[in-house]
Image (cartoon, rainbow, N blue to C red; front, side, top):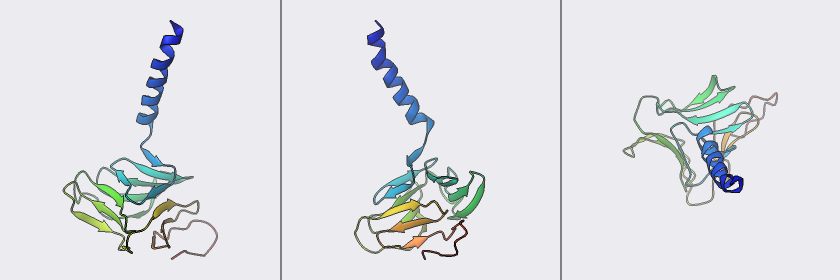
Length: 142
C-alpha cells in the first residue's frame, strides 16, 4: 500500500510547488514570454513583478520600488510581454498597449534579464534598461 501512495504524494508536491511561487523563471524572460499579474522575475534582492494593479515594478528587498511602468490602475487583466521584435509591452486584457519600452528592432531572439546589479536589461543587443544599477560601479549599460 505504501508504494501506491508515492505517486499521489509526488503529484501533491508538484501541485504545491506550482502554487507556492509565481516566478516565471529565475531572472529571465525570453521573446514571446509573458508575465501575468502576480508573476515575477527575481535575482537576489531584486524582483521585477507584473502587479495586479497593472503596474510593472522593479523592487529591491520586495519593499522599495526602484522603477515602474507607471501603469497602475490604467487597465485590468494586465500582462507584460517581451515581443519577438525586442519590445517590452504592458498590455491590458483587451490588448490595449499601456506602456512600451520603445525598443522594436525586428524579429530576433531577445531576452530580458534581471541582473545582479539591479538593472533590468533587454538583450539581443542591449535595447533598453531601467538604469537602476545598485553596485558601487558607475557604469551603465545604456
